[in-house]
Length: 447
Ligand code: NAD
Image (cartoon, rainbow, N blue to C red; front, top):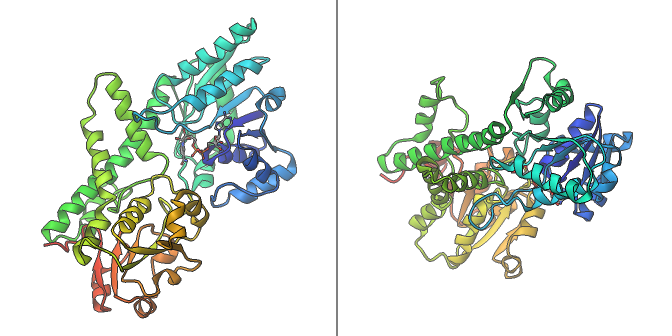
């Protein structure tokens, strides 16, 4: 199969590389010339475990190509995946300008029957807009070329994207035309070898499934954070409660970890977009409004604990932050809880030394330059360097090397033995026995 993937970010690059790995010929297209040039030299624009060898090998084998020119990629392809960004617009709705720009360009160059697949996360009704945008271009050209638009939302998790794409829980395909379903069935056959994972449904149902899945996961997190905040006030350790409820098969253990809020490029924007879509239909999403509000507040919980301990004025105090990425396994800092914490610490007069195993470059590119220039924020090369002479350590992202650190060494390095654990990685009793002042999320410390 000759596939074109448009948008070479987390989703597009993983999609293109994994299809190539399964033997298809794939051309990845992006408007970012630096990204495409880097990829041709084996330099990946993102960090994703296991992705680099797949990209490099398939490029060498000639199954994976990179270009900035969509018309060039369209010369010998009839299957197009749109995987460009759908960031939140000003009103919170998904901004479809990139998706529709690609649709128009496809319409301008389409030559023969093709299938256009929406891989980006897009609101219900977008496939119809893509269909109309392409059709308008064909009409303007005065040509009649049949095509189908399919919805195939992506469920990969950053940090485990290759694994998720290769062994998905399910593949959702929303397609109205049987000829399109047949092509999609064939395309995904290598991913369905040990069991059938593809669920066929209507296009609008597929579009809604993606939002409902992310909204459900965000709901689980916000629910647990609410319980954790209550536990703090009542002298209850939420970690026992988590295990207690997770053991119920109807609830399960996944996605009920209390923490300092969810971030990333998906949950915050997708919850917002679903709330917005509902509003357009005159519907008030009471549960989702609360999920979003709880999460926004949860991102300030660590700072609240810090000021409860040190007072509101943090001038002259130094903090060591472990973890900047929105979650372990990725360099993605979009909507990361770390950013909210850094903003608050710096505004309160503190200085920060931060360490992240892979997000240093992303941090330098996205955080305000004056934080670095003024010395308010220093990024360290090693995890323990971030703790030298600090008044407290704050754990924000639970990277594996942070899970079982050398507490004795930490105590020697730090000016004050104080730990704020935003992901409940440590045992409060063990740390208290070692002489640390410890605060986690919902460990019952405010009674
Ligand atoms: P991204 O920002 O990493 O990548 C998007 C890419 O599209 C960029 O490289 C950009 O330069 C390129 N682009 C923009 N306009 C273009 C155009 N006209 N032609 C060619 N390329 C163009 O985004 P992402 O994280 O990969 O997300 C893409 C979509 O997938 C979004 O809708 C997102 O919600 C969805 N999604 C993301 C994830 C995730 O974990 N990141 C998971 C599932 C779904």
